[in-house]
Length: 208
Image (cartoon, rainbow, N blue to C red; front, side):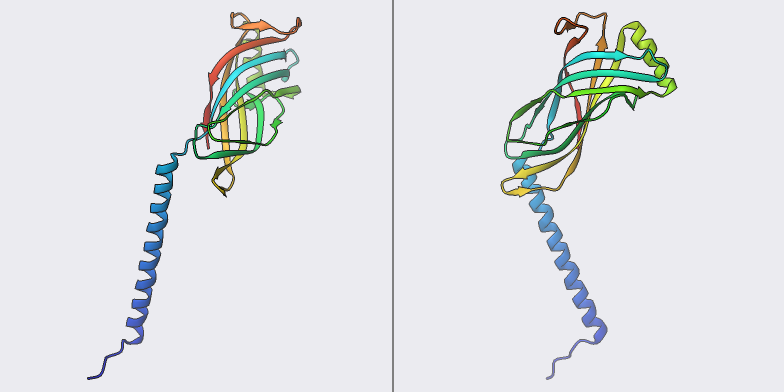
């Protein structure tokens, strides 16, 4: 009794079916591996806290231009016990009503180990930075009232390190609101001059 061979079309269907099943099994294995790694490592994004802001200059007297000088102290913590963080690039600047009012200052690249904490104190400033007219009106009013709400922002790139494995680069966005009030008691003079230091200890929002 002879064995009946499959015709051309049925053979192709069997081959495609096997390829599809193989791809499906491979994807399931990859997904399962990712879930296991996630469950073991429990990855969390870094946390940031704005410790203080020192204001050396804040001058909005010239129409539609702003001159500022700040020093900000930022605390960053890696909450992961098995994952390290490479900060490849971090640019810090000050924002007022969604408009950059200082130049960007780069924080040097660094590696943050498991559960480690880093503290950075970059200077950010701007000389005669153009401000949109509608923002300048509000800024002048806020300055006259002695109360200004700005946002310290960080834009950058990070990589994750697990053992010998290092991931690709991811964007990191950090937003730290800073309420500056010349009439409040939450500040102190610095160096005997016009500089004013504000102790804020403000938790920042972080997205990766």
